[in-house]
Length: 498
Image (tube, rainbow, N blue to C red; front, side, top):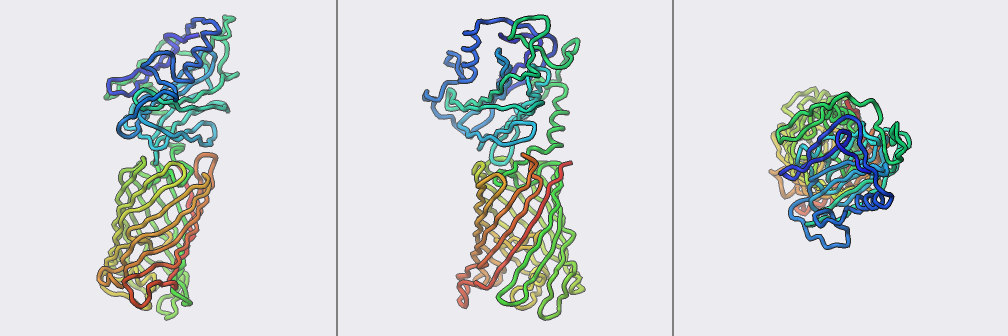
């Protein structure tokens, strides 16, 4: 059977090599074929070959090498004559596909793949076809792209990746015929003729045209907005997440940090803040609650007082294998423990992430902190005294938890499973450029994190981090390895999607 005319969803290749969406309504015409023809056509669709050399070829054929980064060039959907639903994504270049668990949908991660064209990120709306599939969307995420197939009933699927002419790839996902939605059309005994669920409009709707000349279905914007509000675009695996939280996401957090030297009373901070995703590439942050809980041995600083609340923002290029952004964070000089209000401190940074697929990532970058009047050093109370005057250092002063990090960090993060990640920390820091040789450091540390999720979407993260010994100081002749310096941090964050 071949579906014609008014009930077929077709994707038309454009001159730029991207896809267009032509949605139509009405009743279906069918053309019967023999059983052998149906089987041959189904096999051709699955294997990506129908005898035409211009079509995708099997993996045993030398397909050459595609130049440039892997790109999504053509997503497609089709209901086969035997009732199966087939989703295809054509990629220029090699691709590795990983299936993710999800509620009410099928999610496939296309590692290292970019989706530069807007038309290829539009949802394909399939709810008027004889299938359990309601929409197909390709989205850009950190570390690659994800193919999301929304379902109206649970369904199993199988996927394959085959090579195409020129070194490309064809990703094919096949779903079995739905007993509920792949029904035989009324008024016919042909088992290969299907009716569409729902009531068809009397006439075809006229689609809008975007700037590329592509026809857009009337409810494409509503479907895209629905997907955004559900915020299923944020991967559960930590290694796949972007530098910024997604658009319309609130991420409140609590942090507890403990730091000290040797047997002295450690400095303990309890903080809470919030991150807000304005757009996918830009977020705002604020840490209003920042309390010092421990007393200082000198009894100069009392415990339980508000210290250095902060505000900040992060934005930049996110959503692919390599991410780079800009970060600004300002710590107010308020310290009620000292009954003082100084100029505070300013962090300027360039966070960078390299995603290694679903199993790991590398976090690095460069961060410079301006301590305008010793406020940050005094709050931490590390070093046996109080600073005065402006100090500039190559280090990252985190806000929640209140934690000191390397100015040029090198963090290796591994995801042994979707719900757990492990990290090893190293890096380079200079805590005060005026005393560079004495404060040059190579910190060491590690972390372990756990994610709680609603199937696919992360709900909350719990992180435990330790830095010990805090640093090697090759410029300090008195103590090449400062094993007394330590930091411990516990961090909890949850995600609320508007």
